[in-house]
Image (cartoon, rainbow, N blue to C red; front, side, top):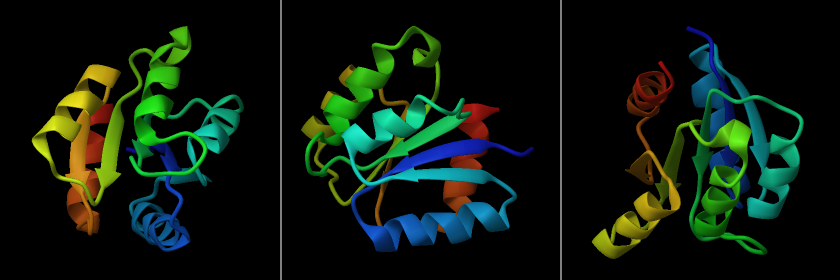
Length: 121
């Protein structure tokens, strides 16, 4: 199944790693450098799933997720948080904002692909 994914992360290394992992799985990837940029990119695409970091400049992952959930057309779009954070209170905050799942960096490409297929399928 070919999926279109938006990845929002301020780390160019992570964006490059995601490009490799998802391209190898036949997925189309759009990238953004932070939450503000992510909302701009989201205006022009219809992703099957979104991956978002939490700690980013200008607009963090919590604000990005809340803004995405505030848009009628993206209320049901799965959002996976991909972050170095693992504190339960942060996971709870992300869930309250509308996140669908949580993956801690560094990520395992096959597991990430499987998670995307599960939430978007």
